[in-house]
Image (cartoon, rainbow, N blue to C red; front, side):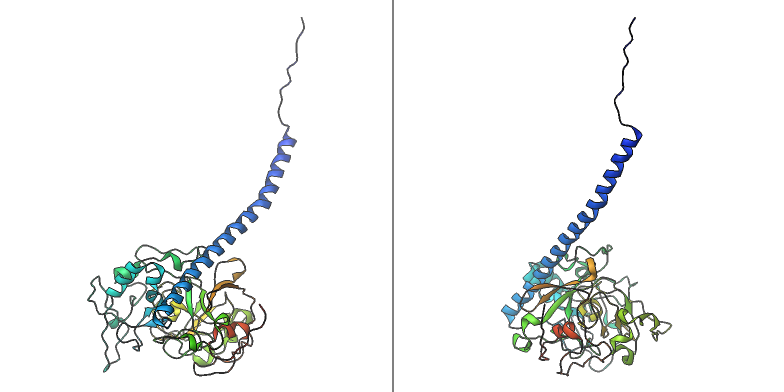
Length: 368
């Protein structure tokens, strides 16, 4: 009787291990490429969103013959406690007319010329359009007082690469901010050398350095690193705290024991305080931000641009409508020099980045 031998087909252990190794190698090669492609798409999306904001600003200028101010008040724009962001002004040009009407309808101001009111007394917020309010924000991060229109989230102001997301009931965040140039001291209430300053509506003729050479908007990182309570002598010299100098860890801030909580950079797109919606062209993108806060968060400082893009660079909108990517390695000149005041007209001491921020300092920008 004959017996047939049946051979079972299959893979040996060595063959399986070889296949697994090959698959692992392929994944190791492909996954970074996929991640890079996704980040490139997010960066392009970010550029398109910033372009939309820049176009809205240009359309605002075409209608009114001036650009919006970075911080204003409905009736008394020169009041230092009026904190309405310039983003609100351009909402109708971003197809957000309904939101604009809601926000404007919720604002009413009273001017107290004979007293110096405290910050908290000026933030009387509720859900009624007739409310008197001097700022679009609660007096502290832990306050339960809110006004409904200020809670709207605006997608065009959010970079898709930023992982930080709003919680329900929070004010909307922004990854885009207004340039105050290379001015540090009193860039919250006083003059700046940049395109924007409080209660001032720049015109095309004011930008004598050229629109294509002047940055209007940039990305900022929500909740970016912040050093607070610095004296002017420290604050006005960027080398004292720049990450590139290696000195930021040695900075000693005069923080009072009852210091109010910092609410977070970029966490109120409706708020015109520079901490939330402004940046300086001094420190390179991704560096630390610093400020002179001694009471509330309407204070001046040196506020860095920043993003979550690969390499730490930022998308910037220029006056001619172009969007350009500025790397973290951009020339920032001499950071050991004190920042100019808003009245100074000399060239920026902070290299190409500083020159991009000034509007009338006769700066010449060469190269890409």
